[in-house]
View 1 (tube, one colour):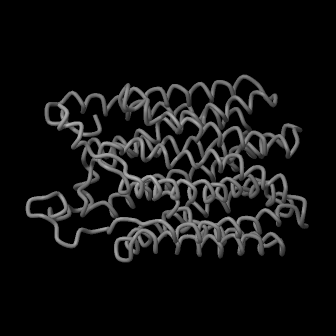
View 2: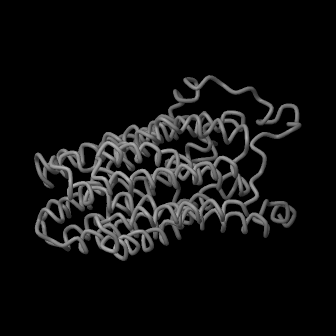
Length: 414
């Protein structure tokens, strides 16, 4: 027993340092994404007459992720994680600049173009969680993902705070926010240079090792029941979160509450998304992936119920906070399962497919958020979310049924 404990892989100082720096990049980079959500809809309605399309630049950002995720993954596979992530920061600087220019000239099309460019930066940002798995031993998968995701706690405080500080500093309002986004991506570019990532491919893989196994076609990876169900769960988690997060600033201001209240609700929402990451990995290790994912669907549903109970400030605060917590449990659990469904030689394309499908959902959700909020209102939008959450619950149930099969009984994610 002593020998087994001694031989158990552990995090060494270099691993901890790299994970810490990656968490810092997550914290700063995610704050820019939070700023985009908080500022874009409210900045667009200052000059664009059709408020139903206020969230379209955010939608274009999600479409940009879909457009860029496979090229970004291919670049990382060829040039390495650090090079690929720094290219993402360059796109972030360019995208924020284009969005700010569009706002300054009241050019809606230019703001949408900026969203597409920012999509590359967000595609890279989403791959941080997969890079975290590569920086840690096998037994630390859930914890590594959870630890890096905790960077969102800082992002949740930093993003809305920067929006509050900057949205009236330069006219038109929110122009200063886009300038701050440029500084944020420049900071990530700098910090990323100090992280040491392992090679994307082993130079001399051992015969018979997983690294030496040839990659399977993408369709064969995607048709695995665990992969399909976990991706569906992640799609619903992100889709529901984007649906309600994108519409909430417009709903709050539309109800007669202040811009400051909208910023506070986004802050509470992002705190709900990332504060649980301090203990989500431990919860998964103690209770299992599927129970934690089930709690996530239940908490998402509780958030929607809170939103349907009224239009007071506290309804928005409680609802968006619970939606954030539910997203955390469901998304981290689903991501952990996905990392067990591909071989090392397949990781970039499998991860890219996972994020492509997720952001196809969020692109649709973010567009519908502004449209439905303008055309139908906050209550119908939340009622539509109930159907999405039920699909996530069915995906988790499917995973439970797959777990009972003998072939999956010893799977690492279970």
